[in-house]
Length: 365
Image 1 (cartoon, rainbow, N blue to C red):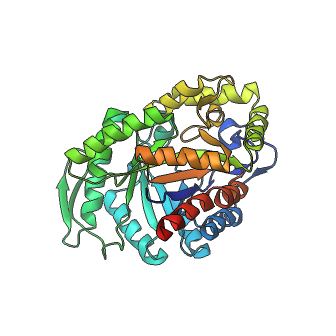
Image 2: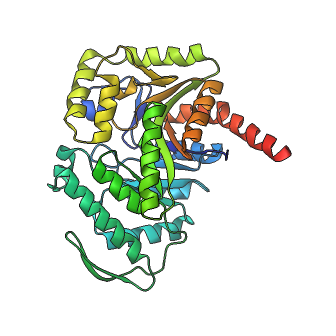
Image 3: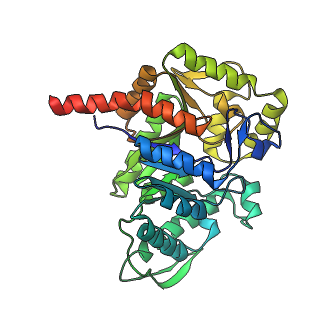
């Protein structure tokens, strides 16, 4: 089994010791941190120093704009890659191809793209996007076709329902071509991923649910004669002992008032994202029975959406759960913690060495 690739999360909507998301709930939080570039640079520099492959940035009105912010942070880091989340509704595919090529030029090839079709109708309408979910995925399919075509030095001409371009091209092909990360649990999302994704992203769910998705996505990719890797996004709470880790979950849960949970659930349950609906079903909107699989805790997902389940346990237990996900087929892991700066050190110093020791043992053998 090859060594896993570990990424971290860049908290561009704010960070802190509590799970309550002040930017979305409208509630104040204790010991909260903002989105100042100096603090985000600390997180990025820590991830760079600790050996993470890259950092994922979110996209939306609840966070800083990811293209501008990550471009600034490339000057603060050396090897770290930036997995920039973006929506096809925000700009033309040719302009995106040009921005990606320029990013690769100025960063030394450290860009990856996380394509997000959009799962919250209210959020999409803020940007003037009134398409329904299936139409957004149809547009995303065309967007990615033109994006890859514009990186062709011979240019690319295309006419579809959403885009019509003639001789789309960029100054120079990006080196390397940025990999495309893509998630989504609906049939429309999976079809687009099968045609275009280099890495299919899932959120943390019980292993049996993830295994079924991997099998289905492998079949879709094979149908399109394409290779596909798999990644999973979740939080992590890792400590020297399991008791210390679970004590942290109790502390986080105690900071979630009934009011904050109700406010968050109102927002999360209105979303038409199938992935988010799956997460909602796992936590059932209740603080009870949040252990949904061995070492997999759904507490943070009461307050925050998207990849907000958490691996919880001792360093050895967390590493064992990661190995089990590798056996299912996952190559890449995008973790985060609260706060992201301190938790990056805990994971990198407690869990990552266990995999380095395994890799060294294989080489010696």
